[in-house]
Length: 354
Image 1 (cartoon, helix red, strand yellow):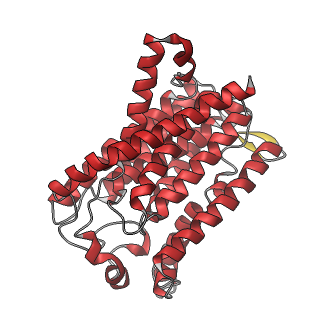
Image 2: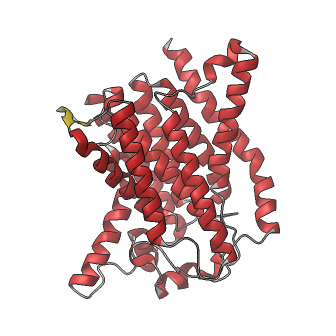
Image 3: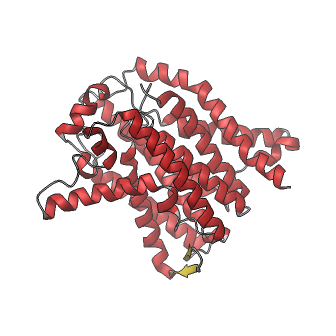
């Protein structure tokens, strides 16, 4: 039975990767045909100190006006195609494909919805970004949308799934009561803020692909097979994106990818928590350590500038600081991949020990 369930998780991973590889040339042709890149280089908007800095512009401005955005469509689009395809196969041929349909109310409805909401809202931002010289949706609007989704998702867990606690390693469930809803929102906003890691070719794709595979392992160990299959499918689609995002990138993930992945990650982390008798949220800063450090360094930079009137880093988040120090982009990227793999294994171990 364990081997059969493992196949139910790994097959969607492989299918998503294969579909993504096949679909990428079509997406690339469309994006280049319509010149889907920023018309003005530099950071016109963003979070943290990475917005609008001369140092950042010197490192990345030129490629921003020649490399298409919206590559994240490949990720959530591939997952959607796979989900619909497996559901159709399961309906037409219940044996043997019925077992591969991993969509169900208890485990995957909400994370799939999160992926699509993030993808669509991010796509709207990207379309405005490439058609308007003054950028896409304002940061205020994006935070409002993400915060509203976090409140809705927190309410769904609380009211529909009966979740009002978070798991802590070696301790058990910590009851939060009604505070669970705003806590969910704050975690969602924090994970969304980590999306600014999408700033070097291959960096975000590799980190997110590893993080989602780690949560697939945790969910599988907790017998949440459908959730594990979805996390693995997202990982497979992200690996397909990464194949074309390795330097020099064919396209950028941009907001439609980073928002989709961060919202989905928030919901999957909570789904792998008390619902699975686990500790999915508490180990998130470990498993997604590069994302965590991205948010922390951005916050420290802002605080340092406001309080001490000086920068703590050359550029925040810290991966751009390493670039300014002279690290080649590929070195930053690959070291982040290594750190994410190690952190992911450690986080899985903590989650399984409980």
